[in-house]
Image (cartoon, rainbow, N blue to C red; front, side):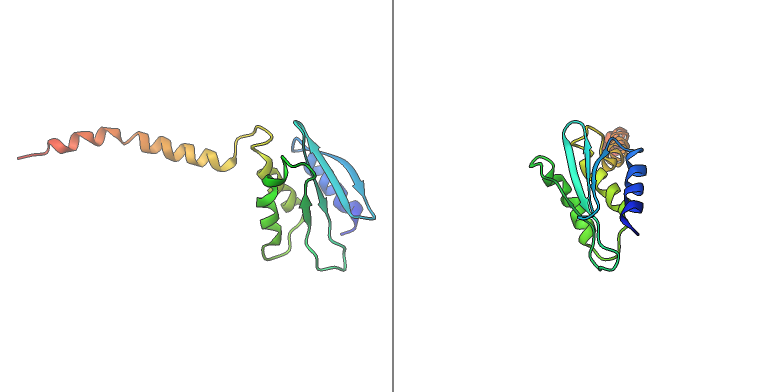
Length: 128
């Protein structure tokens, strides 16, 4: 996929997220993204003929630790699309953006189920 097509994919992805594509550099195959409050990262796109993967990084010390999930995902087996990489980055940054983590929702539902089981405290009275 040529760089302009990748940039189009990135623009479309941005329309559904808080991020903006603030810069593209075709010679470096680099795209820079930004969202308030100060969340920034960039993606280096692989060359067509190259077997390289995408690379994500942030020059912000606050953002960098959150990219670990996306970096692990990219380095795992199999080819990834730019959209898949951007989605993983978005998921990684949800706490910084003040959005609920998608995994937290499942945990809340599970803990709500556990709380409903309290009436079982009556069982010890089943004596003789």
